[in-house]
Picture (cartoon, rainbow, N blue to C red):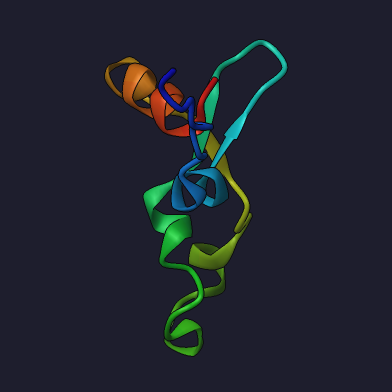
Length: 70
């Protein structure tokens, strides 16, 4: 009998994305991903709401679900 292996979650993806209660995949905005580097040179208006999240595109959903084993 062949061994059955557990499928591991891709930890890099798990740290970067969040799943909502309805199953949608949320990611950080591009501006907010680069928010911790050289902050002192930026206007304060550019650094507002560092945890802003948006829904990921539908094209990535299948790939992300496979990485997260959902």
